[in-house]
Image (cartoon, rainbow, N blue to C red; front, side):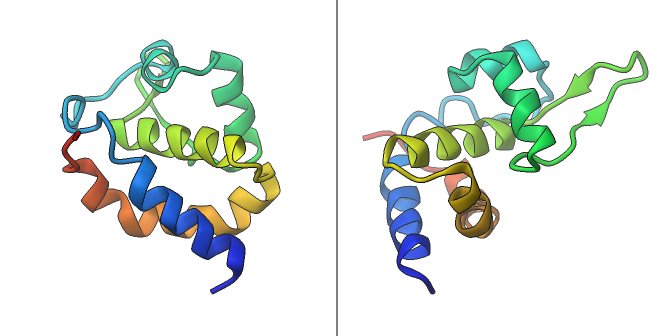
Length: 112
């Protein structure tokens, strides 16, 4: 495991559990709701999708994107990693596996 990967895992363990317990229903949300919950711009979400930092979302019959609360977790992880100085390339290379491996646990983290 690389140094960056270890650091991202530590950050993931300590930083991304905050406030998810409250929001953890598995209902689908719109891109606007996702942006609001993750505290990012809608264009940021679309950019991360193009860069493949976020998985391609399901589409409703109307064509609107459909997201889950897992996407909130992913976005918050990406933003926190950026705050810690990681580039999007580093996050994509090292952080994606950490997010996927820890999503089940993060869904049920309690705030302190």
